[in-house]
Length: 147
Image 1 (tube, rainbow, N blue to C red):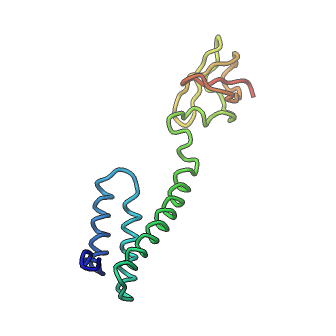
Image 2 (cartoon, one colour; image 1 turned 90 degrees about the vertical axis):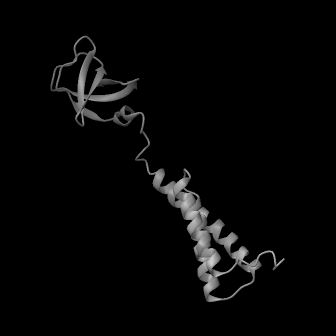
Image 3 (cartoon, one colour; image 1 turned 30 degrees about the vertical axis):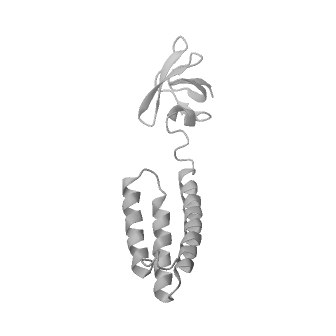
């Protein structure tokens, strides 16, 4: 079998890491980067101690599993930190917060400015300057009540 795999060696792992990095740039998602890290790690280990091709493949396989799991944990922490929780439902993050009306609510309808955005609101008639609490949403409209 050694004759079939004569190319394995230190330079092979560096070239493999480079090819995997190029694949990462061309493919969607984040996966090949972790395999590239494993290939670079295998290249470093192979530079330190000469090994058989079987040992190199085992080190690459183990390093791949470790780096993919570590990368997944790192990215899941970063992605699920709550920043994008309401990405396409921005109005949901206003529920439970209290704001001051700049314009009166007349006939159950009004406008509320939050963070430089004007929202349509629905609730009991209240004069301008009143404090309202957002209690729900109906599509893009906020439902408010006096606070």
